[in-house]
Image 1 (tube, rainbow, N blue to C red):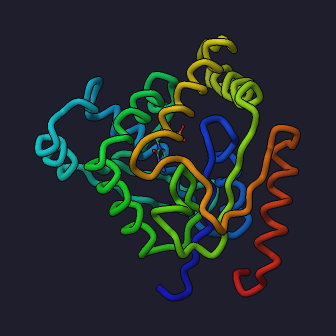
Image 2: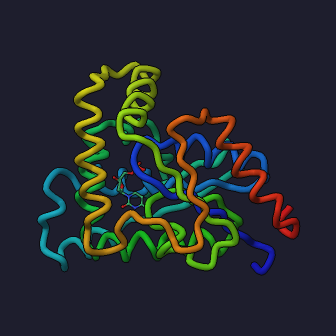
Length: 225
Ligand code: DC
């Protein structure tokens, strides 16, 4: 367990965290954990309006859910209730539901425990909103990515089109701004860089450039590799 280390990648919607987390994990030969996907699948399973369900009822439903992570690098696969989590969670609507359920303390506590349990078994690149600030405050490397909302909307639109979904740029930008607002202003674990995170503005950088920047920082602490 003492050989395990964690790299955290936090930031708002559409900043490129998932692509980067996959790439960094692949380069390091460790697993990556997409915690946005954990919130998304939770929101999808609980259904619309789960954010208004009374606490004890929510806690009972959560207690019946299990998470697991298999594989390393780009082959890391997140499981929920024994089934791989796939593209069904990657819609703007499920993203919005996830953002709304993510404001509930019962959900955040449950997710935090599940994320830490996964980290006990393996080294991780963990991406999300509160990885460096709340879930893994002792992570060895912490990064916080940011970018202009319009640039993020464009990236999200490209992603959705690549998956064969329709994408209107203005609608996506509006949804990204709305989600930023929810994620940055919630009472518990709001989206914010940890004090010791390296902040990277990716607005004018491509994936490769951000990747190189992250890997350079990681290599600066040689005991990791
Ligand atoms: O990264 P994403 O777009 O897949 O995340 C979906 C939502 O889940 C996001 O708007 C807020 C929530 N989330 C969170 O609150 N904390 C995390 N660590 C990851 C995601």
